[in-house]
Image (cartoon, rainbow, N blue to C red; front, side, top):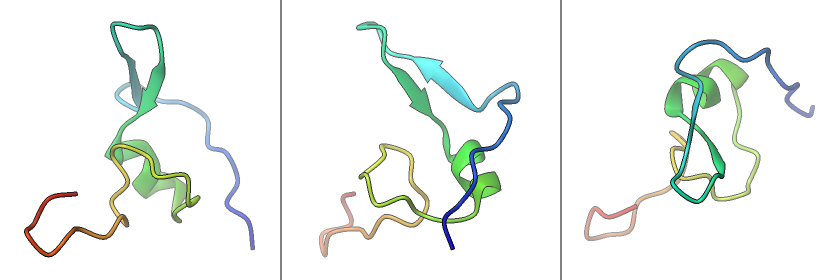
Length: 53
């Protein structure tokens, strides 16, 4: 089952200095699943053995 996009709420994203929109962990948790795109704030992304994302 594919996760459905969620309506944006305050705190769901921010813009980088380059103008890219970045979703926060808050948005990803509400969405409910990982999309597999390697998102910066994905709460399901596996960490490397040394503890780095």
